[in-house]
Amino acid sequence: MRIGELLTLPVNCEIEEVRNGRSRYGIRYYSEKSRGGELALAVRWLTDIGAELARKALAEILTITAPFRQRTLLLEEHPTRVPIPGFNWVDQMPHEESIPQILLSTA
Image 1 (cartoon, rainbow, N blue to C red):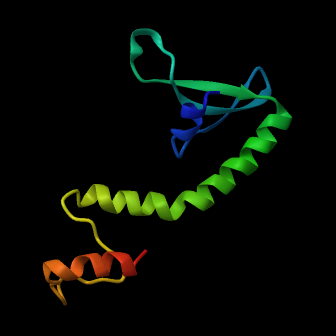
Image 2: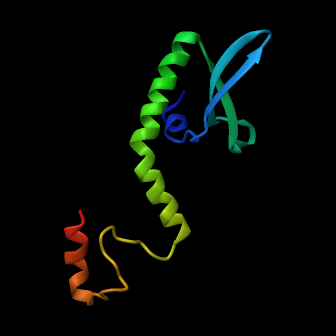
């Protein structure tokens, strides 16, 4: 897998299926190389040992990235506003000169 493919894994990238009586585990990803340059999903099937490692790694990645994915959803829902955690715009409309102080205090 290429680094760009790993960085753009969908949240529901894990695939498990039974084929010919054998259980298989794979990771669905967006292939960087595809015919016609269109975005295409591909599957990387893993060995049993690779599957065990991938399950653990993906669980950890999902845990670490959960707050950032939630923040991204919020920003997508309100594309014209960037809510600042801990600051309520309705209660206090800041003056233009105080905005840098507000932004620096939340960093």
